[in-house]
Length: 403
Image 1 (cartoon, rainbow, N blue to C red):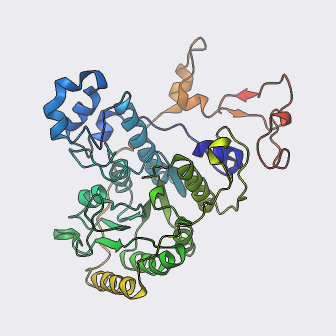
Image 2 (image 1 turned 120 degrees about the horizontal axis):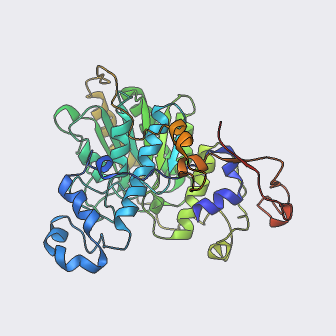
Image 3 (image 1 turned 90 degrees about the vertical axis):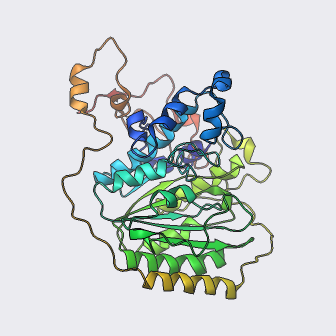
């Protein structure tokens, strides 16, 4: 649904769209344990009785059910975020987005909160090959516990999570949790109460982010955009915070249980990342009926009482600033020739070896482009969205092989 909105708003014209890299077992074992990955590869709905002990051990069953294509889902979700990190490492993108990622609860050897493999951790590990310091920012309503746990004892990754705290899943993310060992003071948690609105959110988010960026001086940033905290513009103030500094950053999806609102959120956040204004009136698209009865991009903010008082937020903010003042320094590490990228494809070899009688590999066919004169998609025709009447009848788009 998100992809369909991006197409019909015309945002795809300002992006390069890639097929997700399919992560291999080896890719995912760079963080996850061998036995856990072997289990995910083998488990299926029709053999769960054979793996009852393993399901209990790896926390798979209730909150993390087994379904057909589970392992393939993990491969695509993780692969997309790894590919995003690789694009940044190669300086092929300033912003790389994987809305299918953001599964921040998954642990090294355990599923949690509908998350099976932690694509964010895998992406950050990839970024660390080329970047001394990576800042991770989580604006999901749930605490980013899996990512924090993975980097809790290192100073090369700073984690920052804004989340609802208390009797709420996963129950972690206390203000006092600041990291351990070399990672002490490199974990930041901002526990929130119910009902925070956009104006209040910006009052805490912008100064905290400015302080984090100034103190830690990251080389790259990863932002998790869970849509389950959706009431308005969360990414907007993040974008404003970064306008004055030149950072490459990767953006992932995350939580969200009302699918039409998740699509709205991620479409809008894509437009913010592209610095492009889009209309509140939704363009006609394949899922148009799902957005009724108003058919608007932005949803009406909740009328829930904001329990986050100014006094409470200022108190939390000052304690975070105090913790940051205790941080020794922006850590450095002696860089050396990086290991090879997770995704290495020699396209020239693939093209030379391609058999004209067989289907071309996806990595090559995806690079084929249509001649601009062959398929016209007018921006104004049909009300700013794709209109089939704008396509010349009985003509196919001209494709050409990549040079």
